Amino acid sequence: MHSALNQEETKVAQHLAYQIITGFDKSYRLFSRITAGAQKRFESSDWPASQQAIKDRITIYDQSLSEAVSDVYQRVHPRQQHKEFWLEAKAQYSRLLANHPQFELAETFYNSVIGRVFKHQKIDNSIMFVTESRCYLLGQDRHKVLNSFDTSLTVRGLFEEIFTQYRFNVPFDNVELDLDNMDGALRSRLSPQALASVHSVELLKSVFYRGRAAYLVGRICMPDTTLPFVIALQMTENKTIVVDALLTERAHMSVIFGFARAYFMADTQHPAEVVSFLQELLPHKKNFELYMSIGFYKHGKTVFYRNYLEHLANSNDHFAITPGIKGLVMAVFHLPSYGVVFKVIKDEFAESKKITRDYVKDRYRLVKMSDRVGRMADTHEYVNFRFPKNRIDPELLVYLLETCASSIEINENEVVIKHLYIERKMTPLNLYLQQETNPVKIRSAIDDLGRCIKQIAYANIFPGDMLHKNFGITKTGRVIFYDYDEICYMNERNFRELPKSDDPFALDTLSVAPNDVFPEQFEHFIVGKKHLKDLLKELHGNLLKPQYWKEVQTIAAQDVMQHFTPYPPALRFKRQPN
Image 1 (cartoon, helix red, strand yellow):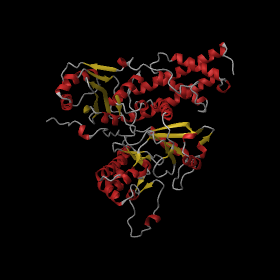
Image 2: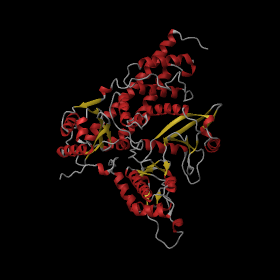
Image 3: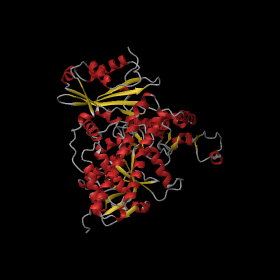
């Protein structure tokens, strides 16, 4: 047992805490500067800059973290400090967080510094913020993130007031038509009695920018119910703004904040209040999902880990191999009662996979940096992730040791996985199509599979391995791609026609380069059974034609920001007045 710190050691711990909070504050300023620039990029239709901003904002965290860790090493030699020093450093840091507007993000930054210093070998709540440091009284800063509007106005007057508050430096295409559309939409969804009972209308001050779209997000409050209230704006090719839709259903808002989309640019100095408000609108979404949706993915990982520990404490099922066909590159397992899957890169790949471990990591990083257009699942990378040994199915443990031994450490009570990815759990599309008997649902799934492949391609990503086992389907029937080890940019593939010959072995003698792709062969491996192949050819036959892929290559090369509306087309307003 070490004695208490002397005065000099206490001063060093105090200074260290100050260095780390200074590093966080700098990081957040840079993050906020990029986020705040979203309005200008939207107004100027500078889509290449928007794409770059996605990458820059993700990169900032690691850059700031590296600087903060370097500062720590200049001040102390971490391994030579006893535990009391780190207890004091955390206590000093906690004092600095007392009135900090981003206290929860600052906790995560501190965890990242300590994690990096100790190479993620210590997950210890006494020296890190594994659990929340304090109970934040949500709502105390709510007024700082919300605008409230006069409910005594007419419906049209309300919308006029909203657009007096939210201003853009480019014109609306037809503001009178937009006001008419919103007025009609709200009146069609709420009866006169319901409209008369509205006692408050609130919108977050932050505008939520993503790609060619911007969203005003809030709620309409009545005595017995509260409706989400989302005004969806789009930038036209003519650089004018249109109101594309008015959304008042949680299901539609949920898809906008979905896990397969790029993170929003939504500038705020009070993220806890913004997330709290969003969770009131979307109570089925986890807190960590909402942090991630607005770009705070590192803190989202922290909140996920807390949620994971809480779920473990309140469940008793066992981690097991996920149902379905085992992957050639990843070992995948789950906890049946929990809504995520855990993916570990295997030590060795099948002969057909001419890739390396580092290449796989790079592919997952590429997706993180891309606009996922609602079709590619977000993944979260963890190191030294701990699982209780007594909760792991013996068959799973044997499988992990057989396939991923270099990533596994086992001690008396835990199985530690040195590197893994976590993704939202979905039903693998191949299992769904085996189990589903409703022909309408099967047709819908195959149709959405084709749309998924096409939309990813338009976003300049070639999915590579398009076997239907590499796609999942959500509870709402949306098809999502989640296997990234063979993805690449569209210009990295050469789409060719199969040789026309009576010789069945002609392809064997054809000169084939590593980047050559023959779309006519896709029907043989995207889906297996004949009736599914026929459906795919009927609904998306152009996927099997090289010319289609070459046309998409041309479009992708133009660096034009693609926009696929994340709500049903029927909700979009007609642009031609009657």
